[in-house]
Length: 301
Ligand code: ADP
Image (cartoon, rainbow, N blue to C red; front, side):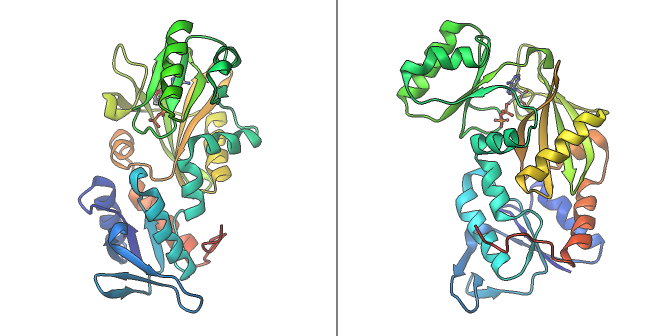
């Protein structure tokens, strides 16, 4: 197969591993920087160009689109979909997952466990907003944040009020969430491919920190998931319409709660912690699904 990887940097661990695995299985791979792709949008023959040349004949495309270029990157991916190229994850599903609030609304509609979450815009609604999520301590999250930046634990009601007022004053979008204390500064990253969790790790925050992000100094270890955790992760990925997803769960005393569904989950942490060939499994999934061309939207929506 001829596979395109949409990635800004071929030296990133995840991109390198995908190239390696695809080539080891006899595929031809091209890494395309989405920002270098430009498009001819027309009714007869949609095209993608790069450095004066037309890109064509790709059988599959693996999107590795960073959060900062979601808009442009998903437009390029959509163009591939319109040209009939099989996308590992579809552009609509990626756009959906990048909107944290929209994602939680979709997951809640399917009855998937979530931390109780509130969203408001007016300072007069702050007291009720805080009560809604069970009072302090609570977590305040900027919707635009990634890698734990913009995630704040407010330990008292006073602190919560001040931070919320400040964010509202800056016109920032944020949500307020019940703090799952019993998670003990740990979360579970479940790597879903198709309808299976193929690898999972537990990330533990460093002492004195509640955010378990590896970028924030958290450490990762292999973990065995319960059947309920597996089922929740798979259902969450399916609800978002993602074939490949990193589903982050918190272990609460009322079962697994989904925090986030990531559409471009990194491979380094999970492959290191689990010693599994996750990249190889992604390529093998593409081999199975690209042929039957099971793309739902073909760039629609
Ligand atoms: P980001 O997308 O920026 O990583 P997250 O929503 O995943 O933000 O939050 C970062 C980390 O903070 C999580 O990995 C988790 O360890 C911790 N965390 C987030 N929300 C909660 C919560 N409601 N209760 C307890 N811990 C939380």
